[in-house]
Length: 467
Image (cartoon, rainbow, N blue to C red; front, top):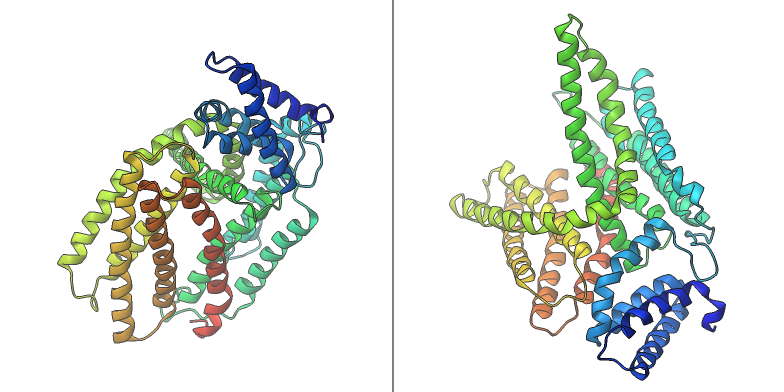
């Protein structure tokens, strides 16, 4: 289709051409040749199913990989273009920008985003409180926390990105299955009356699986797209940052409120504990989601800083943990808390790694930070091997249990991911691979974690007699 029939794409190409033509080293013939290459790539990407605006952004970056000038343009403009596609809803090829189902993203829908987020946040808080008022005990609330809150987040994503009906049905089905399993299985309390280990594992893994399920709504149903998955990874990391900030400020404000009321002889602690904290914690899930999408330009500047600050610290922590494992070398009697700490650090490493990939310029050459990441991956592999050996030794000595089996499975999955990630990172540092290969591995591996979490939720309770 000619450019005059695609006005939005024509505007983007014109902007790119004006920028390139401003470089004195290029003649008009050179610019024409570059534009021809760019349009060829755009047409190929459109044939592959991308919209015009998406195809243009990807084509500029790919052209930049072989042309220094276009590479400079891609670096200068890709962030702005990405924000237009995801946040501002710039016009598409055939008119207004569209969502996952092809509907236009109207200005009114964007402007009402905060009201919708607050409304859904209030709904999430009321859902938690309603369950409490109806007599559900703490065990029920903890077991069903994700089922009570995350549907409102999925509804926000569905309103924001308009996924197709099939994607919405799949997300709703995931929540229905989780509810049937968590509230239908006959979990048995332990001798002290505490929840069974299979119940704890099912609840925690259900939260992970349902978070991935909400990601289907976030991507507008395009879950198979690497770019869409990376966008969800970026959202998840930024959401965590905002949620922690909201939690810290909310906690400080709650304590100040209690102190002020205490100064005038009133005890506000019961009200804060019974209403403010549970409702606020649930509602903050939606407020943080709105902040991520409404203030993308702020956190985009913070993300690279966070990864560069915490990567060296986490690498140092793992080296210390390896030293601790060397000191406590009786792997059969290895301290359980130490093994749990190892697993938590490995999860943090993975999250930090993927989040750093989402914030990295894919066209930038390998640098010192990429080498540091390879060191971090090597330390993580060493930690994972120590944990695996310790878990196998403990299983050989004491037999299988739900907790040890879940930990063993997680570490096997992490080992496969980290080992191949380290190999790809090494290839990138040696100039044999493009960074896109490194990034693709992480986005392609995300469904493995979702599948494992779902397996633990559904299969572990009956496998271990609901104990």
